[in-house]
Length: 371
Image: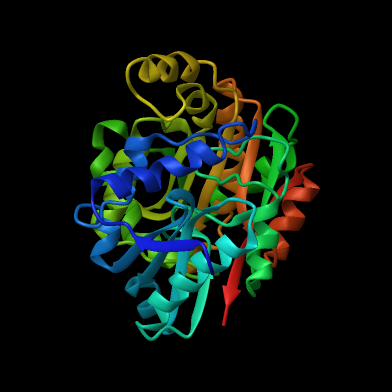
């Protein structure tokens, strides 16, 4: 690894370099959406962000002749390992110039840090877990990512594979349009099933927001535990995510399923705030917040990012009821393109159902593995 120096992020200056590197590397990429720098720093704050109550992480920078040429995070997630009863480690926040030597050095450093903690398998990228942005884009580079989805140059896959990583799982994104999806049949079936099972679907109550978030958190593990890569969130982490989403969500796109007043499922779609964030170029000040507020009014896309039902009600028609209601409400709110993501490649039922309703797979994200 001659000529490449890998150092841990230590101090404010190095953290700023870690956050800033993608802005230098990807500034000319038309489909990259710059994140808000302040939001990235909050997510990386190991002292304050609730994710790190159950995890350790180290952030590394790669330099060549003093210039930053890459970055990576090594993540040891105790919540994941406890839930799955395995000894896994993760890497994330990976960015690199198109140079296999840089990527190998970064990945080797992350692997060394993780193996020192006894891990037997390493997966990624996750930023910093599957509850946040995750996966390496391997198909669908010609359009912007939607909210909480990633974008990277095509050469990243080759860098990881040349370093010895292999595919663990593909995560699929489907695209359809709320105004062209036919929900007549699924709507009839859902309404009948919901009625016969005593289940109702309602929007989140913004006047009782925290209580509704608490109700969802209570069934979160049960509704999503079957999903590959699922990571439980503490109450504090779940509420932190809810607080962040509250600023952009539309109540009619955040649905709770109830039976006799008890929450048994949850569906979440968010306006594609990336359409507004792209204009801000990662800054709130001096004019970023004005651009975000202006362009937020013009958002026409939406992403469905969560839909789960507890086991005993999976045959109740609630999932179909969620989907039909989301489509109806998206139309009412004036949204068009609708992304459903991410869907596991081996979730045959969901993939076939989306394709039958006219959705097309348009992006593929990959989680890699290193044994």
